[in-house]
Amino acid sequence: MQASPEFLAFGRWFMLDIGGGAPTLDEMYDFVLNLFRGEERVRLRQFIDRALCEASDETLKQLWKETDADIYFPTAQDLRAFLTGARDRL
Image (cartoon, rainbow, N blue to C red):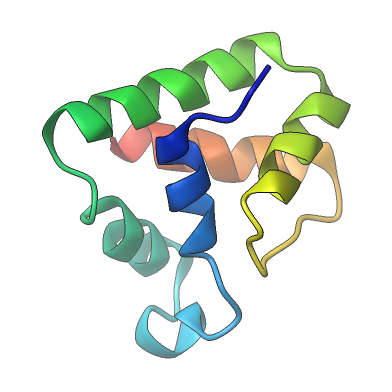
């Protein structure tokens, strides 16, 4: 599975200093997801949904690594929970 351009853009927003402007997870979701509009938002939701359903834990971790995000997750389950939260807000 190859990461979509929208997913790569989504992940890149999760940098170490995001907590300064969005201290809670809900605020981080709101800040980043509000940057996506229209079809781009639909494609991001579709990709996250597909990745959650089809990707193995290792593949999902690799997809997240490709985003160059500064935020990492101790387990694949933590990453799945994070992405599920994002998908549900899209």
